Every structure is written in structure tokens, then in C-alpha cells.
Image (cartoon, rainbow, N blue to C red; front, side, top):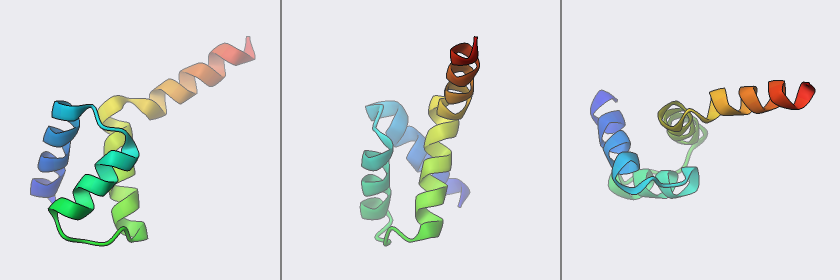
Amino acid sequence: MTETLQDLQDYMFDTMASSEMALDWYCDRFETSATDEVIDFVLDAHEAFFGEADQSYLNSVMLDD
């Protein structure tokens, strides 16, 4: 799984792909279906790579003020 994560991170770095594009690329690259496990893996990697989880938290804190 580490090798596939590295490949996915390289792709996201090179293209700044959306999560949907990253999922499509991952499925094509590794000839797999978009199962729940694959979707979770790609979305978690995308959020970690782009920091979206932290950004949504910051936005909610800023909107509360």
C-alpha cells in the first residue's frame, strides 16, 4: 500500500488534481474498482496531502466568531 500511496502523492503533486480526478486516476492506474475501501483511501490521502481537513476546521472556527 505504501507504493500506491507514493504514486498517488506524486500524481497529486504533479497535477494538483481534485479528489474526483485522483480517484479516477488511482482506479485506472491500479486497475481497480472504486470500492468503499479505495474511495476512503484516496480521499484520506487527498485530504492529508492538501490539508483540507484542517482548512474546514479553521473555516468553521472563523465563522463562529
